Image (cartoon, rainbow over all chains, first blue to last red; front, side, top):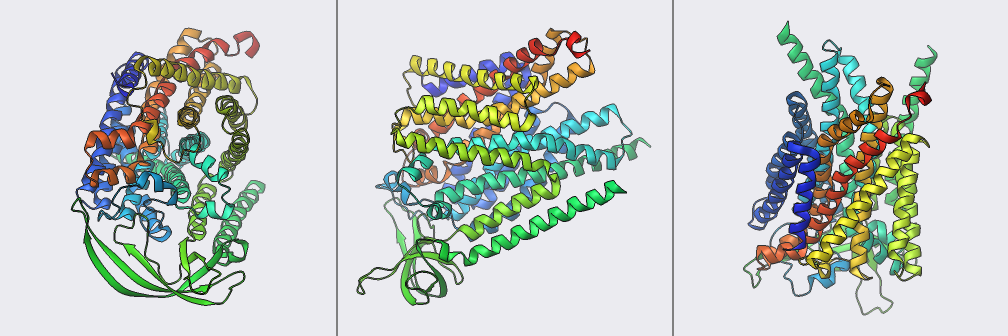
Length: 254
Length: 370
């Protein structure tokens, strides 16, 4: 068996032992998400527009991640709506920025890997960069929206008559608690993976000026920043959606 | 009344910082003198030619040529105007069209006969703008509680830089020990900044280190048993040192933040639980910890998974369009990210029982609390 298969089996076993049914479904969502990511690349390689592919695949990835991970229906529904709103808002930022900054495709540092390849493949790499940026932010958005929606729905459960204003304050305060640790997840997640590149930059004595204008470095930092913007926006948006839901439910009960 | 004045102050200060930041972003349009490289501004472009092409894999693309007029902004040739030709493709994998107003790095050769070439776009203004947007949103929505997180990220970046310098000095000879120690320092520093020095912080730290450590041990066992079949180290990008240790270190560092994130959540909730119900039994605390962990782990593993995999998109696409089959494309581009995601996932899952167990045993006892 290959290493990936065995590691996958170990992870599945651990998730099932420790997480029970929730763990098993979470593992399932991971597999689905991998399938969706691969599907996204294949669709783009077949010539489908990158924007459309990221919107459709993004919507489905968010659904899998949120509904497979959270049992509380109100929390999951709220988190999903909020995550979709944030995704659309982020696309409105990512699309113009990627066309402005032009950090798409490959850089001179990639030359060795590109040997013998045809680069004129007729697919817009700016579009691919937009897709990469959107998909890489989805996990962080889903996680933050679930955390906030779950926290708020618990508050609503314990105090059914909590006011909208109070709920808003609670939402922001939950957000303040998670933002610090989420920063670290993103920082290490992105930069830990780029150790080799940073050793390259330092080893070849790139100046500070060439690093901050380097295509690969810029593309990577952009992804961190987009994820941060996504997480920050998720806090008020999820809270807002939850207050709407809460008001709606309260009205129905009257 | 006093409170209100204070709150207004906070708001005004935030707005002032945000506006100053935006001015700073604007100033990067005039920072050419700070660069060693020659910077120029595109003043005029003119499309001159387009050619359709088809490669050996039947990919259709268009190659364009444009005349670009640039004015040098700094150093010896400042103020001089050059005309040069830029060739770019519709797909733009390694090239791009230039637009009027773009600032670019150029090379002006000493010999008059050879021509001036553009070396790349100057991206600092756009990058600064996005950074400004993120920080402005952080300050406006989170006010100053976001600053602590920012501080810890900045300090970690400095440490990261220092460790890379040390690694280069030793030619990668002590990679494991160097970055192993660094990972511990990262964890201590980050948790200390977020939580302060307390019993809770120590429990979180213990869970983070133990969870990550056990995950690495399990992965190494799996590596040994399967002889690392299908782990394509040769496909690793930007490698200037021995790839295998680099890959393992990247994996540990990559998952460290997520494991800390999760341990913090679990331990904090359990300490709060203990405060609300001081008579709760350790076993009950352990069970509650697992319960909290259930709902966190799935989304968290997905965060890292999407981050690790999205990076491989452009190269995967190129492989597919260059007539490679799915299996080969996967193993050359996505398999390393997959292994990384799986090892991180194992760490994230293992941190749950470790954090819950440590918290349940090391919570301040009733006598101490009273």
